[in-house]
Length: 210
Image (cartoon, rainbow, N blue to C red; front, side, top):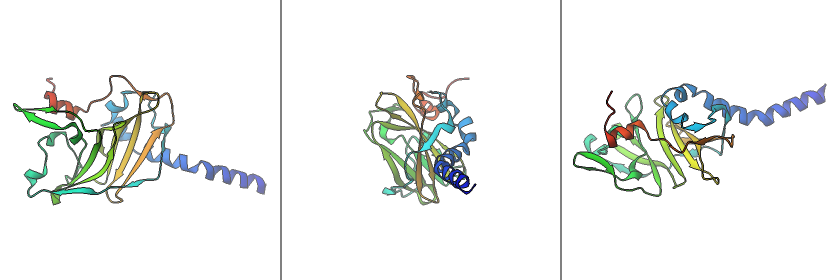
């Protein structure tokens, strides 16, 4: 009996990390059924329970701090494409790498940087800080806020088979950390059509007519 108990205990401990990681994302199911639904639908065989934490949570970089002199100067011209927390205290910019510029009253993208900077804006302090960056093989495609403390960066990463696999990054303001998850299902990848945020589409092409 004691040997059996020991075996069961060890088995539970061995499997606990993956269980905890899967559960932590399942707790955000509402976001994936709601604001991130269109993003998830661009992937084949997308299932939230297949995601596992890939590494230890990373601290916000908190570098390249830029403090604006006023609220007006704080926001880039493409303010409408930013993702702001429910309480209005924080906002996230994932689009600076597109080198957005306004010409003849319309926004255009004049190119793309190799690196994508993820910038967190502290609205009350009119200050921006880079909290992370990703190279050409990975792009954050969408942002959503779970609450005033937690946000989700929905990304895609190019794998060795030249297919985009989903990457989910959970950010927490108080803890100043980013936790990354990837699917364990090799058959989960993004369709060729890819994904473009509705916010970005509205900015570049104008709002769709109903």
